[in-house]
Image 1 (cartoon, one colour):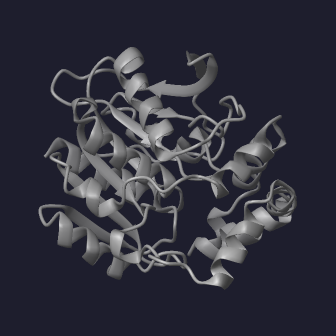
Image 2 (spheres, rainbow, N blue to C red; image 1 turned 120 degrees about the vertical axis):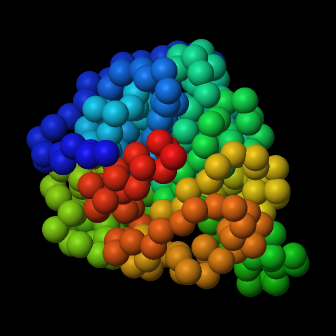
Length: 291
């Protein structure tokens, strides 16, 4: 199968869906195929449907492809809520049920990977398969059992709203966004002005700072190993091996420990391989889904 190379100026228009009285932004492209499931692409922390633009366009000839902005991110509403994996899990499950209308193959990057894993494991009727790209989420054996005094003080400090606000104001600067992306992308030329703007723009929305602060207060949800023990769907792991935030080989071994039937590839990319090397990622997704 040949996927379609993308151009920098291509875009996919979107629309809104109301979920629990909040506006949720999503995009759809391609057409339904009777012999293959739709794809649902789920972004990471601070990103949006814009981060999947190259994949939406590259896969649209062979699949019905959807992408969604999680509540609190992108063009979706940013209400003052307690944000958690369970909240976003329920959002995706309801979106699949009410809007897409059939089980999907979920593909999630970073935070979106953890949320997609929650859906596929805890709402299995919504999924046909799962694709994780440098997926986030803790394992049980990496959780501190009894934090020492210093770590408790640091956590208390981080939980203060004014501290989170100051951190947010610094990290949302375009120059900081660019430097952060250049640290986590192997190919620095993939960090374009458009990419920086796509991440900066939602940070200007009313409520964005409170969403950021809420993340520090999120209670621990199910661990990755707990979720993998519930998973009964095919799993594809795509690892950007140059990710400085994740030791891909070490983390991949832990996924295999709890889900040995997975398929995995290690790629010459950083934390966001779908955006950095989209043609390679699109080809791997297409061939795996069709198998």
